[in-house]
Image 1 (cartoon, rainbow, N blue to C red):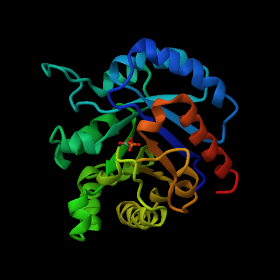
Image 2: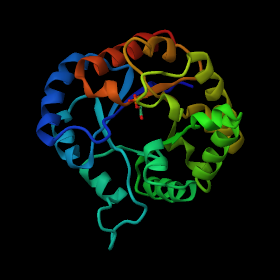
Image 3: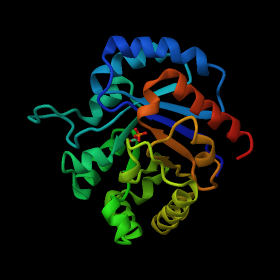
Length: 256
Ligand code: PGA
């Protein structure tokens, strides 16, 4: 596999530009010696310029949490991948469960966004995950498979610029993470599907786990063989907590 672990933070709708600068002042010195994992932070759009400027020359990459699929036009309130690229973003998260469930995004819409973000040269973190109801009805694998196949439709030859985040909806923001071995089972299944889509590139895709990752459970999660990183919400808002998770990743990178 060879890729570094990816430790990503999703700030969701938190922090102002001023708070962003303060965060990095605290966070950067905590992780400035870590170079064996990739570190990414995805703040709200309005904070991206401050985040890019403050992290310049560091080992931290900045990404966005969403985008629209058109390059420009009459789409009030939207942001395009062209704009994200120009602002210094390297990644965009697409299909996050909050986008799917609060804002009603369909697999078809998410797929259009994936295609458009890749065309602009951004890397994509495509999120997939089942709800509690789906899990309890035995639908986990069916849901994940269709989110993957529909989300990645037409970009099967560009999987080298895609990462997947498996985020069980019931584990997001609840404080209750999936059991590492249960997450591992789904990650294995995801790699199986990716392999069917493109056997040459599947091995280089990082499948991240997300949902209540914190310093106390990060090691058990990241120790699973098919978990290649984490997408961290709540715990990425605190420089100390997120730095601890980065360091756990760095420690495991030595042995993984
Ligand atoms: P959480 O969020 O770590 O706060 O559960 C994860 C996510 O939604 O990406």
